Image (cartoon, rainbow, N blue to C red):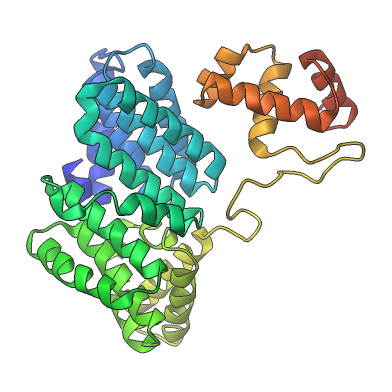
Length: 359
């Protein structure tokens, strides 16, 4: 969405909602332009940290798209869902969704030009999951300067900067960021410009220049606050959390209304960071009940609940937007943890253990 690229998220959000309402009022089916708008809105909602609504909307659209022979739209819908699941801390689900996107790309030669976009999503996901070596290996295959599309080249260079920053290659990171930031600012690409500023603050902080880093971050927050940007900061991880906390401390005695508003905004972003319990790989959503060999993950609980509802593997895959093979793998894990051999036994055992209510 053009407004999103300009960093005007509130306007992009409202414009998309108004267009969707008008199209639905006219009886337009959720295909074509309507589906594309829904997916674009979901990406805006993700950036604003409205993750529940983003997830619900994109999964609804994907279920309708599965019978629609428009691979490009399906590909971007699955990539959007990948980012949303990553933002939710569901890395297992994000990798499952990314696998579907890669399968769509492989099955349709016409999508070869979008291969680089899929790779960028994979690198981001690997970085978020702290697999720097794998991210670096995939990054080396891209050669960002070869990209012909400005928006794609921007994202490739930003991703390269994140990899190099994680590797401690600060001089190389700065050498890439400086011209990219200047070009993005001059070209009015506000979203990219803000990302470069955030990364510049992290580079300076990593080099021991915390005061300069905080000053740049305050500038970034000032530009981002009117649009309510959140994921821009949260997705930079623990380094950004620490620097944001420093900014909040520095603004603690502020009396100017603008600075107080900025401190409150930074504090709200800090609250959006995942807790240690939610970060990283999926953890069990409940304590291990007595008699259970190993706690079920949140995804396994979702599958188990749908098994209890009598859903087939195919239907479970459609509802959870994963592959049938992934459903079978989760089911096998469930059987092992519950020490059972069938769906009926699994449901009975789960109710016996109080994993979910008997009925």
